[in-house]
Length: 371
Ligand code: TQI
Ligand code: CA
Ligand code: ZN
Ligand code: ZN
Image (tube, rainbow, N blue to C red; front, side, top):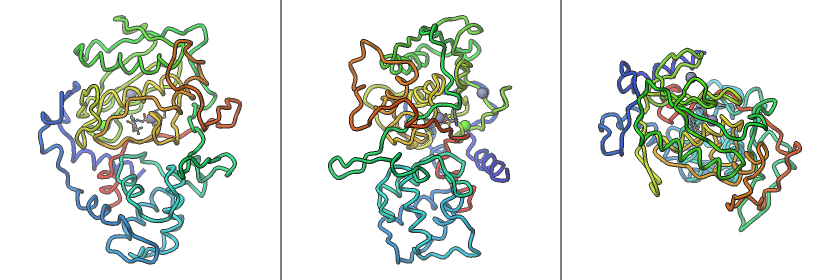
């Protein structure tokens, strides 16, 4: 609870315009004022980047902060009275577990892949609570089967569903969606959602049709700021970007205080602290259709995106997840065939639930932990 309050405080500092009530869109990054993109915790960012290449046995200024980070997310169980800057066994084992959880090579070293991962936005909740986790490191090794393709570890598909596997009823294969009239969104913005819906309908027997009748639409899309009456208030720039309810609820809310960016085509990276609307829309639609989070990094349903990047294409894992819920699209010619990821919908993937996750940027984590 204390942490949540701190998070709220940290975010207020970065707040763009707390009084503004409608969403603001930036056609591209150069139209975002530079002061929004600067930030106070850049030094922690720099310090963490310097850890790249650190090995067990090394000693390095600031490693104690990294231990604090791992302690917060549950990788270092007991808080020793003083964290030292030594790369000791405790840190090595924390790094290894973290790597397993995020499907990185479990080297126990702070290689660049691992450090880059730590610097990404992530869930605000610990990965490990009282020694238990729903992530890879907590699964029996048979579950976490790997096959070595070109020397790299490949994990089995790990999509998930909500508890009880809620989904849209089988007599309802055409879902309607509508935009909150008050938002007065432009066609350009609406088309981003249309494209995001198309990505899912391509892979399944579901279709999505836009309607102007907001109140009766299956899926209702709206930008809101702060408290908007569903018990899940938005929090200003960064933090939570959007949320969607599981089927058959259909509410899809986006935080009107984000620096939403509309990108298109081949753009793969945008600026820090700007949020790519289509990337978030594709992810939230996954939730609206009944998908929980996935532990496969390429998946749309993976609970992290690099800030400033764009990820809009369904991965194999997303396709297998959505097809397990709704069957496949007879006309689909994408790569739906399970590759080395053996599909088994019975229980092999075990539906697990990840609790509330915030798209917390590293800066917010650093501010909260005092790094
Ligand atoms: N919103 C969270 C999310 O969509 C809200 C959430 C947490 C949630 N747990 C959930 C929604 C379980 C449904 C079911 O994951 S967010 C990301 C990502 C967010 C996060 O604003 O933090 C994306 C929105 F994956 F990057 F972390 C979009 Cl893509
Ligand atoms: Ca927010
Ligand atoms: Zn809401
Ligand atoms: Zn999510």
